[in-house]
Each structure stands twice: as C-alpha cells, then as structure tokens.
Length: 505
Image 1 (tube, rainbow, N blue to C red):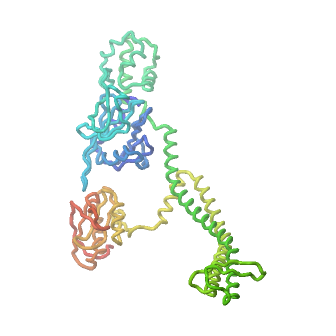
Image 2: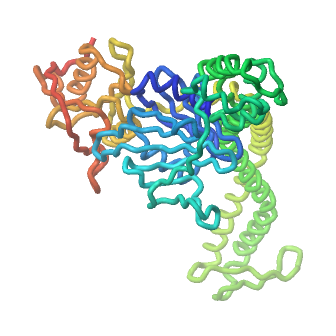
Image 3: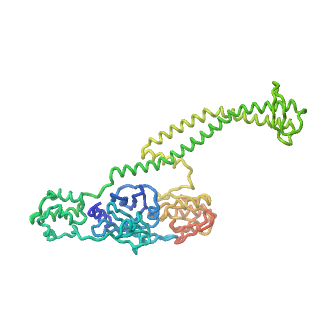
C-alpha cells in the first residue's frame, strides 16, 4: 500500500480522535479489525505481500486464532488516542489509552509496517519495547534490524525523498531535463498505482522530458493527489470472498457437528439392535438348557458343569453357577432368555424408526452444507433463540436488556458473560441475584439505573422492604476471588442507590 493512500486513511481518522474501541475481530490469521464507534472497522491486513490499512463499514467477525492475535486483543484496549504515520513512510503508529479495572491494562502502541514482503505488526509499550510481534525478524533475516519481543523497536532506515505534502514549486526545478518516470522515483509516498494516477491527471507519459513550462502543472496535480488520492486501497474481492467463506464455515461447523453427533448416536443404536437380533439364537439355547435342567434336576450331581443328553439324544454340556441348585440355574437361564427376547422385540420395533431418523438427519446435513452465509446466520440465530435461556430477561425504560441470575451458578455465568462496560447491580451486604444492565458502555439514564436496582433488591433477601441500598459498578470492576464459590465476588468503584424491594413497573 502506497504512502499517500496510508496518509489519506490516517488523516481521515486523526481528526476524529479519541475514538472509542468496541473490540477486535480477526477475519483470518493475517488480519485484525478494530471496531471504532461511529467509524466502522479499521482493518489491518498485516501479512505479506500486500498489506492494507483501510476503513470498512459494518462489523467484521472472527475470534483470535494465533498467539499474537490473542496478545493484541489483550494488550491493545481502551480508546484509540493516537494515530500517526511516520513521514510518508509505510509505517503507522496506533496508540491505545489502556483500560482500568480489577486488572489494569496499560497503554500500548501498535506498530504497523506496510512494507510489502516485509510487512509486520507488533505490540509495544509506550517506551518502545516490543511486547509481541507477528513475525520476528532475526539477524539471519535482516542483519541491520532485529525485531523480537524484549528488544526496543527500531524503525526502518530513513531515506531522503520529496514530501508531496510540503512540496514547493521551486523544489521541482532540479528535475528539468529528466523524464517524468525519473522524477517519480524521487517523490515520497507515490508508488506504481499513484504514479499512474499522477500521469493521468497531468496528461503526460512516463517518457515526457520535463521543461520549466511543465512545473506549475506538475505542482498542481501533486497537490490535488495529496488532497484527493485515487482512493484508499480496497479489500480485494478474493479477500472478501475468503473471509465470507471462513465465516460461513465457522457458522456451519457447529451445525454440522451437532447433526453428525446425532447420526453417530443413532448408528450406534442400530448396531445394538443388530446385536440384539443376533442374540435370539442364544435365547433359544438358554431356554433349552433351562428345560433340560428342570427335567433332569434331581439326577444332576453337584459341580460346575451338567453333562446331559438333550431331548433328541445328543450330548450337551451346561455350565452351572456355583452355589446354585440345577433348578435355580434353570430359572436364571429363563430370565436371561426373556431379557434377550424382549431386547430383540424392541429392536424390531425401533429399527425402521431409527433408520428413518438417520435418513432425515442426513438430508438435513446435506441441506446445511448447501446453505449460504446469510442463511447460516439465520439458522444459528434460530438455534440460539430456541436454546435454554440463562437467567431472567427484562427491558429497562431506556431499551437496555437486563439480566437477572436465579442461582449462584447463573449469577456467576451472567457476570462472566457480561461486557466489561455493562453495569453490575447487587443488594448491598445481602444474598441475592446479580443483575446486569447491558449498556456496553453507553450512558444509562436514571430510570434505567433505578429499574435494574429495583430488580436487584426484589431478587434478594430484602424482598418487600423499603429503602434498600443497592450497589452498582462497571462489570470490569467485579471479580471472583481465587477458590471462591460461584456467585461470590468482590468489586470496587461502587455507587449506591436506595430503592424499594418491589418489582419495577
């Protein structure tokens, strides 16, 4: 990506700082997307050979997939307070404010080098020490510059070129007599694509030999290119398609696995039914043994084997259980035969039903494999809505969702599920529900706060009492101590509301 295009993105965002971060998404292993409130996704495509810095509308998705992405997500938090391009070089510095909470996250600087095949992304502290890097650079790779965690960040070596942002007309005079192509090599931030755009605007060819008459025109088109470059580098159609395919596969995978688990379970049942039918012959033999023992019982000597002749005159050896009489052994054989026959009868009844269920599941699996990304999103949403709901759900007067735990386990789960900027409520000093007001950092009006506080008071031991104190704080200030039972928490920065412990309107 060329320097002037990077400059256009940085210039657009720098005037809006500070910007609140709504979290990171990772569409693939080489892309990080920072969702900025009111702006969209600031996309950092940091794997060679074509790095990109651009702003995309909507909301991109994807969990952290690499150790570096997990570090980036953990260390680059809080508002984006700084965005700077080093000269017109392909290096951008993003500075994050950090976050206060039970475990504070210190301010951090993200260094993005968009240098073609050497593109890289690294997390540094404000002193410049590298905390994590996507692709470490060792002396074997670059003998002039080593980049790895623990070392101070060293920028790429500087070079002297004309800065088009501050270019004076007289600075062009030394290039009279050179071709336009030769002049472009001395212009910072302009690569192949912007060079072609500059030629188009000036209506000149690369071989045009510059004269003094060309200089005012060239100065004007360079100024226009700085103010309005061709446009920021777009995400390629192939990259978009790849992200959409990966998102579709991520949505399809749990649906596919759930269906495959059900099919596997039913196929195992079919195997059990086959075995039950095969054991019918064993049931017949057990009944014959029981009949022989009942017939010859008094004549059978003590031992572990009865050697008899069956009713057709053939010799038979029947194993006996030690300590039981022949009659008692016969009864056991009858019981086992009865169980085997019942299992076979049940298998015959369930066999066609189970085969039909497997057929339906296989058809559903085939349908899921053919669903588009949007259809998979709708399918996943339906499953979430049908699934069991954790806790009670309400809506505050201002439209915020409110969660109320009904047990210690639900209290623990809801508090862990909450956004770090959601508000957490609990009756002061009393056993009761954890209540979450789902603001996600948006300001909540007093009616919303009172609504959540009343729910916390009502779902506590103070139910029915008047003027109950309820503490509230941001969820990021709430933590569960080590070895504490579910639902037992500590918190800081709490404020108190006094409400009646009655259901809110």
